[in-house]
Amino acid sequence: MVQLARKSETPEEEEEMEMDVQAEETADSSMDMEQTKGLLPTLNTLERVEPASDLTNLRDLSPPKNQKAYSRNRGKENHILPKVSEVNTKIGGPTTPQKKRLKKKDFEREPKWDFEDKYTMEASAIQTNCPYSVKIKAASSPYLRNQYLHNITLFMDRRIFSEKEWERLEHFVPPYGWMELNRSDVQEAVSFLPPIPQQQILLSANSSQHPKCVSCAVVGNGGILNNSRMGKEIDSHDYIFRVNGAVVKGFEADVGTRTSFYGFTVHTMLASLSLLKGSGFPTVPEGKDVKYILFTEQARDYDWLIALILNKKVKKGLSFYRIRPRDHFTDKFKLQNILVVHPDFPRYLKNRFFQSKKLNTTIWHLYRPTTGALLLMTALHLCDMVSAYGFMTDSYKEYSDHYYDKVMKPLIFILDHDFPLELNLWKKLHEEKILKLYQRPKPETPSPMPPKLAKREKDKSKGPDPKMAPAAVEKGTEGTVMVTASPALTVTEIKDAVLAALDCKLTGILDQIGAL
Image 1 (cartoon, one colour):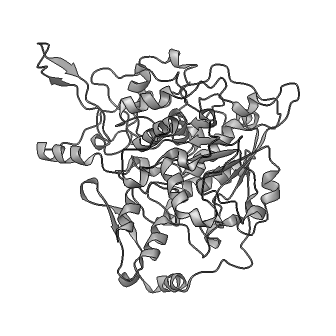
Image 2 (cartoon, one colour):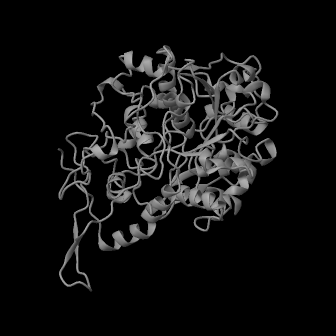
Image 3 (cartoon, helix red, strand yellow):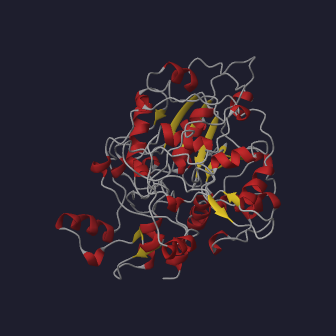
């Protein structure tokens, strides 16, 4: 193993960083598309680590004393696990060792543990009867055969929590684990989740006596769907997955009408409901058969989940999150209809499909795939045949950010996502016939662009104009987040600039903008 050097801190700096660790760390920035081309990893070059067949077969994953972490930059010094600290017990007599909890600030880039690529697996996963299934194609594909795990555990239930699991997952930041989360909150939330007999919930619903290929449509919110007339084709699938601001009213001809699964994080759902309440998205998708897929990314997601289950109001966090979750669901809500994604699943996706260069930088703990990407990959592990609509393609610059935008809004690249990486992955999976990606040539009639935005686009060739600088979200000193904007912009324009990408972590930004 490579020994990684931990960065040193004075006692004063340690105290300041400890006070700062609870602050939300999100960022919003634009990236140059040309500089990020070719970020798709060569998946076949990743080292294959055989997963444990089930949780009980996982060895004691808590590292022994002086255990080192792997660095993604082999041969370069990075950081090590914090040493075990000795503390004197006031009651009980002798000194006893206490393990110091891992914190994001202890690492300058993503640590790599020797059990990084081990996951909780389903011991007896249902096998598909479809000869054209993604699972069959992946097993025979040189591109995917060593990367795709058909029996990985997708969803949590009350049986998964244990001391060993807590110690293992505490090594990974959310959404990949439980680092810095409150153990009692996580344990309480998970304890409410009913057992899931079969992770392959769609295949288990498909009678083996009548073999059928389970088809799924995953509907993103990309502007490419505006005036696409793909609604009928989308509704023809067995199951339809939607995400975040899944506006249907008024766009039925383009995006269809049916919903089987709704994927979200707490933030993306609440932001969508707040921004699109008057635009056809007053509540989350409803229906007795609709299931909700929650991707947990922060402590607030577990607080929200507990409040949802107990039908109480969230009492922690910013005012934006202090709501009664049941208010966004119908009276027919059932606990069995919410599926909470296991942290192993997004970590598996990150390790094998979304290996961004950002993981080797100081913002490593902010990076995660978009919620739409996580949902599409979930469908690729549940369904036999998958079609993707409204996802990023090479012609994304020709369309507005969302299909429901009333005016042209260009896609804004967010610091905590890697859009070019996802774009290249969708193209590769489409070329390999693993999924069908809806693509579209340049539109004959471009979406209308507001005059001020059109002028800014025209002025780009003349160089930057500080008076017209758009709103920017950046990381400030000591881990804080700053929102800056030119006085020349109105509050509405600032909101449009910042909130054009709903699929990011905007904790605190809404409150800051609202105070302008």
